[in-house]
Length: 279
Ligand code: SAH
Picture 1 (tube, rainbow, N blue to C red):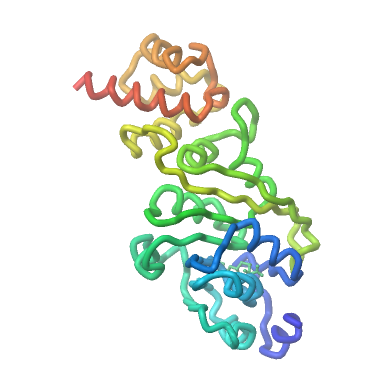
Picture 2: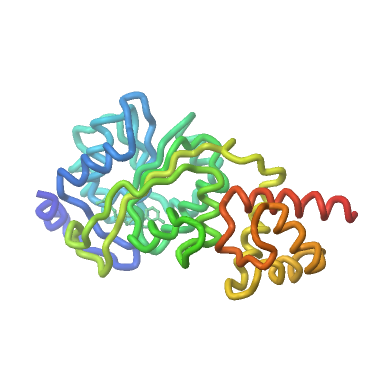
């Protein structure tokens, strides 16, 4: 039993690190299944914990590279993963590992599979979404509310800048809802597994940085009509902004949350051309 191994090594949970472990064998294999991991895959895991998911992954893939910030877990991991010869444990803050270095360690295409520490869920996902070159997919356990934001459709309150950023480069699916009592210790909210499959050519984005800026500014003040947010941040009049919004197929008085991801791509491309012409 994992709890016995933790006790034997005198491990005490560190709240600050978002440590909510999974021990249920069915749930572990369900996550591996959801991730679509195969024997040829290299998997990066963020937050090995006691190594339960690490072990399940290692049985189904070629290699697991597992980051863990908490050095106190190393003796635990050495015991739980003693028989797993295809696992590399890296005791290091994954957030402080530059993407280029991480991808060098992976050595080629890889999948990310993790029960993410809740306090850095969004920055970790965004780091892969914006900077990864070789990630095939991300399958991550996140708070249910985060899953709802990532997978939202346009028109509702969950749909925001993060939704658009993720869905502009990946196909996303919530694969399961996981009740809080499936974790040890139990968090205060339920969770969900989301799978994002990268598809970088999903949309023709002229300039990625400019697209990000457009989405961020579009949602800067959600109550305002989009034209007002655009004219406040870009060198366009309200009239011009309304014209460009209409050219995406949206209403000229629309709010940002009503535009589809495809419409955001169109809008950013039009704005980009407009700014370039203006110079
Ligand atoms: N995969 C395990 C543990 C999940 S809990 C399981 O499912 O049971 C999240 C883990 O991430 C914890 O072990 C925590 O110590 C670790 N962690 C938190 N912040 C981290 C960071 N910045 N880099 C790497 N690991 C981190």
